[in-house]
Image 1 (cartoon, rainbow, N blue to C red):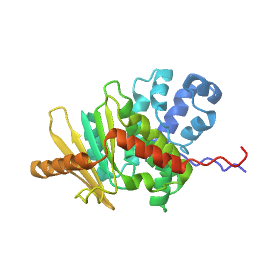
Image 2: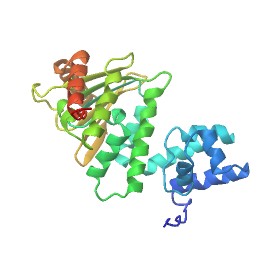
Image 3: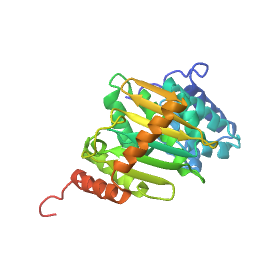
Image 4: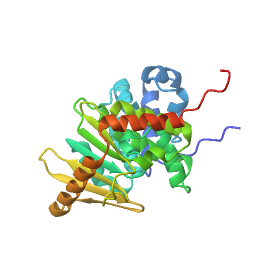
Length: 282
């Protein structure tokens, strides 16, 4: 039996406000959910879920709605408010700088960096890491992270450089199928005009970065702010001495990591381990 929709609270929830406004705009021009689905190329089920506050408006729905309704950037603005509801406050400053950065460098010791994660990997990570969260809250975190990845598809994206610890390739987050999809998604980005991925192998020496995540954000004025994160904490730092020290540590890690070509080979080797073998006789 279908559960009744909950009462929306647009005054207290950006997510609910988004749903209320979507339904209002749709009804203003007399569109059914079926017709709306055809126009924006999202399923009727997804659109109904957004209107009732049960689902998040995954990108790029907001842009499509603004075009369909002629509402300027109304839904894009509401989406920004929805994302902020699901973003840890300590990460807010990093997100603001990330949006303006001309170069983004990141080291992840044991997890695939957020900008590179597939939706399935994210969901498995949040489900395991936040056992007290319900599916609605996890949907919010996933949508937030997917929204961040829009930066990769800009007409003029920043220069990206990721160093990923070998442990991140071997930790089977979500199981073999999820990891197979995740590693396959890394390969096209290993060495392009604006993306570089290197793997730091187990054979590399210990370093100050190995305990967590480091993000270096270079802004248009060439200033650099770093965001450092570990279990239960995260902070943005722009102190010149500290940033200079961490930039040097990152450069050393880069020099000791596998080349992009070698990194791709290792990723492909790990991918073969996760891909299911064909059954005998098939």
